[in-house]
Amino acid sequence: MTQSKRKTTRPASAAPSKGGAMREADYAALAQFRYQLRTFLAFSEAAAQSAGLTPQQHQALLAIKGLAAPDGASVGDIARFLLIRHHTAVELVDRMAKLKLIGREADPQDARRVLVRLTAKGEQKLRSLSRIHLDELGAAAPALARILRSFRAKAR
Image (cartoon, rainbow, N blue to C red):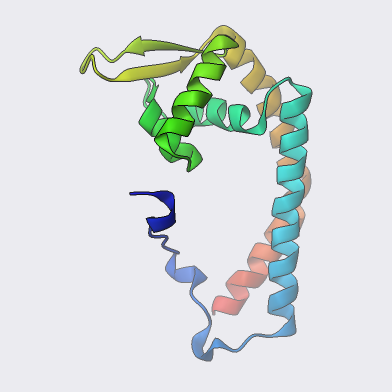
């Protein structure tokens, strides 16, 4: 399924309010939420670049470490994790392997499938970036919690 045809679902708690009535506070909360997300993403992109990575390479390292099975991630897994096309994931994996951030090996269960794992260099870069990202999220947590509480109050 291509990304443009991918069906998105939202949790029931994100359903619009009955009658669709919107208050000024709803718009303000949505605007603040999107601002907080954009601020974090801008921070993340700058941090990745400071570490010598592209934002997409950082996302891939995090996905491989945090979302993949213990035996590694396939190129298809990486494409799904990053919401990119398979051929784009192949190119990303090739570039990351050249930088020695990841290693590839045949899947012992299916030799046609290639599994990707972080190298020591990839682990070190990810560890460093993850620490500062957690600090940044900790700083943003009070504002995000306040915004999320306002959404919850709206759903009642």
